[in-house]
Length: 347
Image 1 (cartoon, rainbow, N blue to C red):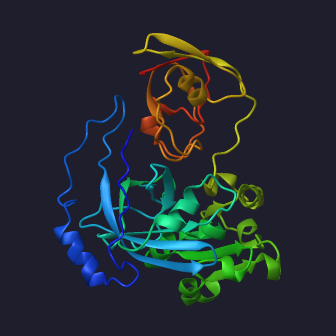
Image 2 (image 1 turned 120 degrees about the vertical axis):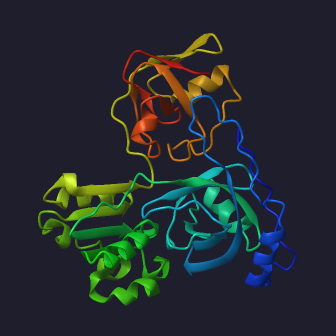
Image 3 (image 1 turned 45 degrees about the vertical axis):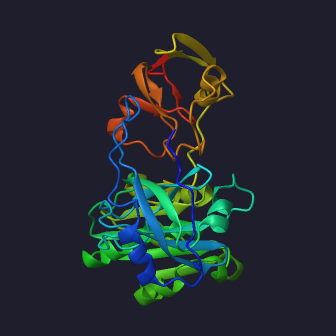
């Protein structure tokens, strides 16, 4: 299991200057980065990163924006996310919403979910300016593909992966429109930053205008790509409105609900045992009955903590994380299941 750093705020973190923080980075024992740990069998090496929180702001009600600084952070492209390892060890995934040209800073935003699983509350309460965090390198399953025109659709905090896309589309000279919905203006982050784009941005606070008008999606001309991030009802509406559903790219807050499930058997190769996975439980739950120390975190197919190598059998993937190449020989136990009657795992 990956170890989370203890979050330690510098004395007087509320007023510490950016210059002082950067001096602290330069003399911190975190730099240079330590050597790679040996990866878990079957996993691609993913070098751990460490960064310092150099800015904490609140761009909207219930939204926390953090600037994470470290020298020479890995490059990323619009649509990418990073895994943040919280002080408790929980792993949460946040879209990068800053500028890819800033090689030393990642920017993320976290909405407080009152009835969530605790990760957002921990972030809001404990991630303070001057604290150190451990991250995993950026990954991207929401790539911005070249196109002459785009329609971007965001619901609430779903604006975060789209912000760098707007910059990239503008720089490329593409035609684009953003439809941005939320509960209220006060709850919608980054409105001042978006205002510079003028009429390209259409804002739909639900308490003022109701749900977003998807007419630009319905009237999209051939060749237009539609990028949407937000709650499931919004994504279903966008997909239904699009003249060409294959031109729609989605980034989900949660994995898509799978269809009817069937039981299957998981053989644990190194442990020399097998476990039955019932139709109403996850492979992770079943495996932890015999291997209770099997690590996990989000249980939603986002963080990758429960990724394991598949030696044989066919997997029905439901995660929002693994690349197509990784899916050839691994799975996330928390959400993915078997297409075949039996899976053999390197466990």
